[in-house]
Length: 347
Image (cartoon, rainbow, N blue to C red):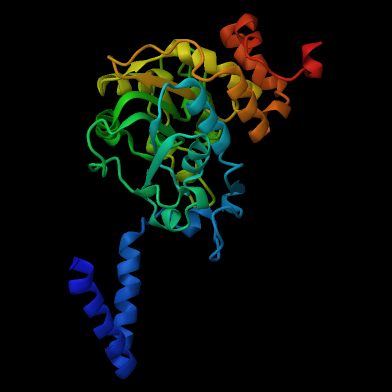
């Protein structure tokens, strides 16, 4: 017999019968159940963070501030596409998966994707295609997977939610998990040798912007806690606790045993511009030292065309501001190598 059959089922029956017979016991059970439920939930990443779902599924619009928290608004299709197209991976882990939108999209593309998050609320409301493939996990503790369990790990808008002093520990755990590659997007500032640089706006309190801009390119951060951009309640916006430069983040990954793949980032950036994400995502790609350097396409032209059509990417019109930023960073030739629909800005 299983533990569930031996212990859980009999205890549940006894509590049910007792609660039905004695109102006072029923009240105790109600309070105990509620407090146990609260114990499983993170204090920040609950319905108040994502918006009050009111029991609705994650596919419906949830809010962070004024932004919808949906598969579309989180750019999950775009992120999954980048992993699928550019990384030679089959098994993937999305850290900070929330409702599992990236996991759902990656699995639709044929990847064996899993996800972990600290928000029990988000996991309880997981997207349909992610259910059974996402679970609780905290980078500051050992994740529930063996060493080298994944060929690739993604961290889309995740690491900035950790305070600076614990970032090294978190990245060591990321290193433990992967045999190959990491793709991350992290709000950053300052120059970036492999693509468009970052900015302080909406990362630093408005009254401190001039101060940080005056520090020049040598300043790498992290930004002091008291100077972080705040929400209406006075807390760091969206739980962002570490805002630092490209150089600072690169050194953190290198200390954890990764090598930054600038050449692959440069190949991806024109596609970020084409998909309208340059203004939102500060991109990083890393590999473990013995992983092969990624060259060439990982998918055939016909596979890429099919996926772009399925996700509607073939109809995207690039934002001229995004194209200009990538062109300034990489040069016109690199941007022209990324196929995209003809737009008025190409004439």
